[in-house]
Image (tube, rainbow, N blue to C red; front, side):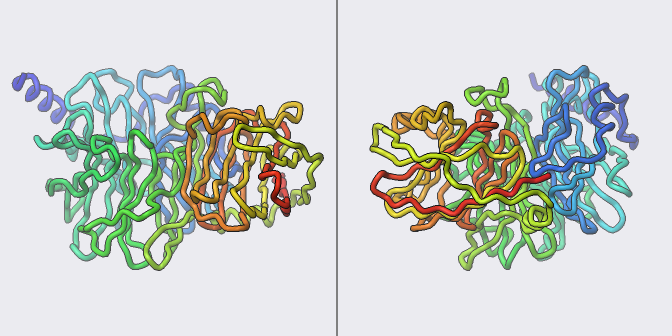
Length: 497
């Protein structure tokens, strides 16, 4: 077994020591993708493709969002070429399409590409990304490419980093490179496993070519210590260091930790997430002195609310602000709010079409029913919540609120917002699909971005909550409160045209 491992490792190392242009024969799906030059959406994806694992960089007035392009049922053996979307306002996107291809060869380490990071040093861009192929050993390795314009890349296979003896060869991915001024060196954080635990390893370099293994940087402190900690990022923001990652199981939440020193120790805040599990693979990016997180909202199999959660979907971005203790709050990015305000689409004050009594096993509710939401727009709402909380139910059929299966529950006593994919009448017997912690007072302030089957809730300027609701489209919806509460709400919808 040792001889086989050594031979396979040598085979990987000697594939090529020459620099190679990042080029491969484009598939028909890539050619279709390249034909779409611009997108206008809150949550973009290129038609025919899906957004996986973004790698955001702010540069020269724009966010450059590199990402793993997911083609379902594509004609190639290879998958997940790195593509690029650029935007200055997080709504109008230029599609640069494929910039770093996979290698469409079943025996090549780069048959499947995985997450990485891009950093610009002087006039040169550096990409460090994952190569994955279960037909070679190690299954995963770290690759390097450079570019002068961030569009045309040259691969440097001689700079490949293989997992050391302390790390698992099947899990050695998602490199994130950052310059650490205090140490006068670059750090590379890598998702891997050591001694059966999901950990983040650290490598260091002074020249971006020669890297030294510095051991485990962050040991697993999640509820399941063997979970992989995917897509890590490390940034200095507002006087503190922030480390982020997404636990691969069981919660699948983008989490963050806080420290005064880049070495740690890392503090886990009382609320340590940037969104619920409807948002994944979030990576942090700085825009001058502001902090953002970019992730994806998954689709579901068969475009059904009851379908299994897919890998990849639509891009989503939140802005993050820090309170005095270092806790991060997720808010609607100012860039998007400006786009919404400037859009010539109509603004309508909503009034309920009818008020109903809704019987549930946890009490009688009064429900105000509203007309269907537009395909794309912003719902702004201020709702009085005098007692226990409220429920927003979507996808109503024949005004049967109790049968509604898409329910966002604002639980005031627990300080939580839940998304249930189960009938309202019996949700106390169901498990929530996702949830987020957020303080709830006597008023709930909402900004909800609607785009087809996606609704992202920004709650009390404190938390973001991303959901996928296919049956929401073209159907009435409702707000329900306990029957003894006096219902008072101010609701407006801004339609984007």
